Amino acid sequence: PEIYAVVPAAGIGSRMQADRPKQYLSVAGKTILEHTLDTLISHPDIHHIVIAISDTDDYFSTLPVSQAKWLTVVSGGHDRASSVHNGLTALPAQSWALVHDAARPCLSHEDITRLLSVISSDTSSGGILASPVRDTMKRAVVSPGSDITVSHTECRENLWHALTPQLFNTGVLRHALEQGAAAGVTITDEASAMEAQGHQVRLIEGNPANIKITRPADLPLARFYLSEQSN
Ligand code: CTP
Ligand code: MG
Image 1: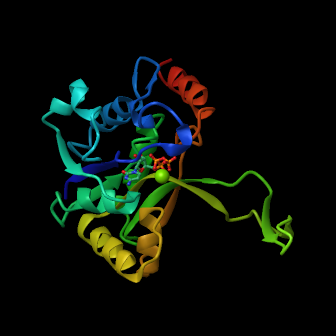
Image 2: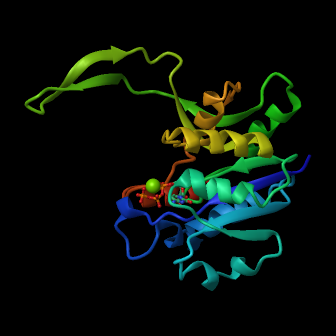
C-alpha cells in the first residue's frame, strides 16, 4: 500500500501570540509550513500529501507550495483530531497515513525512514516517533487553597514523550478517531485513539530536535536545529 502524509495545519497558534497562525511564520528562509511540507515530499517513500487548512485561512493560498500537484487540500476541523480525520477521508482506506504536525519543521529524513520500518513488522498496527523522558516527573495535587504540591514522583523509566509523525493504516485510524469522537474523549494524538481501540502502537525513538513550535521561545530553537540539518 502507498504511504501518504497527512498534515494538520488548521490551528490558530494562540500560544504563539503572533500576528498570524504560527505555521506561517518564517524561520531560516521560509515558512514553518513550507519546511514541513518540503521535508515530507522530498522523502523517497512519500508521494502525496493531504493538508488540512482552516476555511478562514488567508495565508495558505499565497504560498507557492499551495499550487503543488502532490498536495490535496481539505478543510480543517474544530480540533486537531477532526482536522486529521478530514485528511484521512481523502485517502484510500488501504493505505498508510503518516500524520505529522505542520508545526514540527525540524523533522529529519532519518526519523521518517526509521518510523517507516514498522510497516515491515507484522506485530503491530503502526507506530509513532517518541523520545524517552529525561526530567524527573512529579504528579501534582491541587489543594483546596489552590496551592500545588507534589503527590509523588512518577517513575521515569518507560515514560516517553509522544512526537509526530505517527503512522497507521488509514482505514483503521479513521475508524479509531470516529470511535473516540463518538465516546466524547479528547484525542490529543492518533496513537491514543488507536490504543483506546486495543491496537498495539510501537514506539520508535525519534530525535528530540523534532520539536513542536508552540511558544515564541521555540522559534530560535527551531532556527538552530534547521541550520544544523543543512550542514
Ligand atoms: N491543528 C489543526 N486543526 C486544529 C487545531 C490544530 O490542524 N483545529 C494543527 C496545528 O495547525 C498544528 C498541530 O495541529 O500543526 C498541533 O497543534 P498545536 O501545536 O496545538 O497548534 P495550534 O492549535 O495552532 O496552537 P495553539 O494550541 O497554541 O492555539
Ligand atoms: Mg492547539
